[in-house]
Image (cartoon, rainbow, N blue to C red):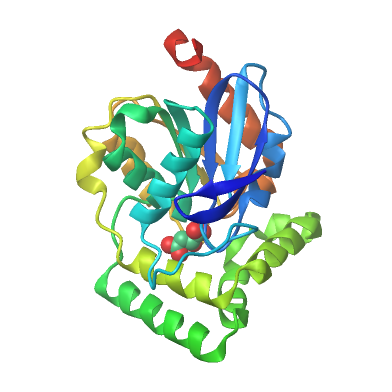
Length: 271
Ligand code: MLT
């Protein structure tokens, strides 16, 4: 589905009817990564998965940097367009950074949080410089090959690599679809993101933290930090999964997600 949102042609996938959960993809993927979740939503839930600005089928803007705030404002504008006021937000990795920004900007719109393979801290100076160098190279080469070559081997678990080659192929295909300028702008946006750790202690909605046991990009320690920092948060580790547990172990991921949705206060589903 598509519409003009915040001045860009934005595309999103959606499934189901009822209380809304918005799924925010990681870098440099698109809404296709939430296929197994949208296809298996529990009754009473409406799943909405946008292609963030410049990714998937959404058009890019004119900004030199896609900040996490810009992405969060795009998500909010899409929810306005869809008539959704309060939602559960589920973000993976960069989608988690966008989720923190959404929470900072629109706390009253968040009914629950699912934070997957992500972290609250800002980049270190070294990581920031690395992203800035990579963004410059992507633009200079006008190619995303370097990002794919450095990221892909670290994204999914060994188990997934050998037992589900289709997951690797889907991941590669999503990465290849991202235009160089989108990659560069999002890299700069992630480099510029602020530290969300101070936000954690103020979160007062139900929260679920998920991490793949073999995630080479977000450590279990970072997931534990999130779960410790958010009052009442639950931490779930998914075995035989790396950075993309929702694709690598969709049944386990969905079981955990559905149990969380079922545990939310009744007011969450009342409309
Ligand atoms: C992602 O999956 O969104 C990225 O690994 C996030 C990052 O590079 O920090």
